[in-house]
Amino acid sequence: MGETNIQWASKTWNPTTGCDHVSAECDFCYAERAAQKWQKMNANGYGERGFNFTTRPERLNKPREEDWSDEYVFVGSMSDLFHKRCDAGYIHNVFDVMHEVEGNVWQLLTKRPERYVEMEYLPWKENIWAGTSVGHRDSKGRLDKLRECHAEVCFVSFEPLIEDLEDLNLSGIDWAIIGGESGPKDEIREVDLDWFRSIIHQCHKQDTAVFVKQLGELWARAHETDHPHGGHPYDWPEDLQIREMPRVFPGQPEHDQWP
Ligand code: SF4
Image (cartoon, rainbow, N blue to C red; front, side, top):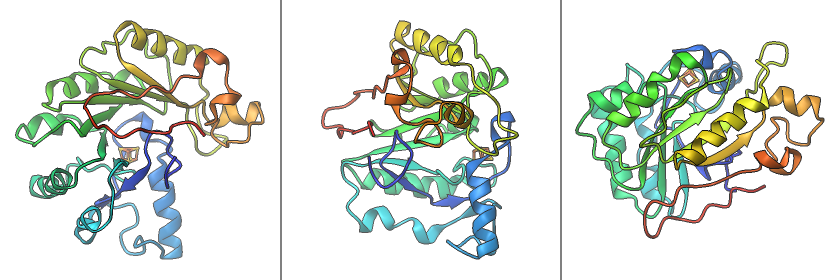
């Protein structure tokens, strides 16, 4: 694992910060809670803007200035790059950097995949992966938008998984991440592990690599696990201990995803 606690990445890069809620999965947004805390402390550059969507052009060159080869870089862990207030020119600037810096994997994740489609000339390539999040049945249409975009590699994060997603069409989806919710303990939603099993079964049937990230904070509390979000596979039922990565291009970095 790298310098982030997010098990499926080794690094994060936030050329934007802040966001607005779009759906039920956002109710206990980690990025929002962190931004509010840092705004109160006037820390990490959040003093003025808090969780308001903000472009951070001063961060654009960081990947050019440091050695990020072999990293899995989650782009926008504290934001959504495809927020409606992010203009197309800025998104192209971010893509310019991703094109120039090679040897790693860039992992974009948005709850607004319709913008992937609207921006039909985005210069995707094999190490720039397009992702979307789906944790609720009402959000399943995001998978159709993801399929419509021209990315060479598509992935979905089923986190926070807040209800049974029932039947899923995973055609064209290379990778699926699954995770239970974390956040305020009296408010977050309980997960049923059979929802995980249903997704895993469908991934295996539809040839999609699957990565179980965490079983969620309520499950972790109930089972008194070391990891506060139930993120250690050795604590889980054996049939859920699955962390696959898609292998999609020669020279793709290895990723050590076990704790
Ligand atoms: S889209 Fe993501 S970053 Fe934006 S509010 Fe929702 S969970 Fe938070």
